[in-house]
Image 1 (cartoon, helix red, strand yellow):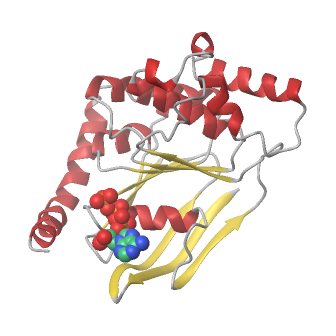
Image 2 (cartoon, rainbow, N blue to C red):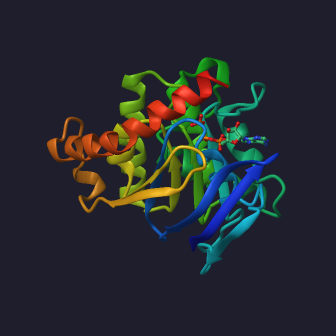
Length: 255
Ligand SMILES: Nc1ncnc2c1ncn2[C@@H]1O[C@H](COP(=O)(O)OP(=O)(O)OP(=O)(O)O)[C@@H](O)[C@H]1O
């Protein structure tokens, strides 16, 4: 399934936050959305996930969900949102419990996704026993277990330290290479965008409009830490964003 947004615009209490956003999320690709603080990135993601309806324009879901999909649009947030009293397996299986799935099959689905996210040996651990990176891997496993059509990721790595971020980026790349998924990935971090994005959408400051869409053709598996080509793309992105970010910053400071 792919997502197509056309002419999406929105205001909150008379304050315009998004304007005329056209955007496509092709099946099997990761689309990163970058832009200065407050430009409407999370709002756009919520609209893609059907949590909010845009005042203008439309968000279309085109095509079919993958076979066995239990929840077409699944969110991953920065704060993991795990239940502290449930084990790793318990947190992952939670999202299957509302579906008519036999216990044995449910167990198999959880075991499979924990293996894919390298969590098998932590199956019985509680969230408080896990590092931040592992907690986010549990959240990713929980999102993947429902076989989503599109994963909607809102700054999933921003609560983590830089080494953990690097490791998790490798994990996401490996997951995608083994079994491509479709995702929209909102981030402030341009290094993450050039490492993970097949396409990067740059929004202007509020009201967020699409300033540029960058297509990165280098295969994800070949993008490594310190890659010169990616660093050049990152610099280009920063050149685009610098003035917008400074202006947005001044606006926020000034209220
Ligand atoms: N439910 C809401 N009610 C009123 N205003 C809102 C609501 N949600 C977001 N806003 C405002 O809309 C603007 C865009 O917010 P949004 O969180 O989408 O931006 P963002 O680009 O994700 O920001 P950041 O990069 O800082 O996370 C901000 O000014 C925010 O305060």
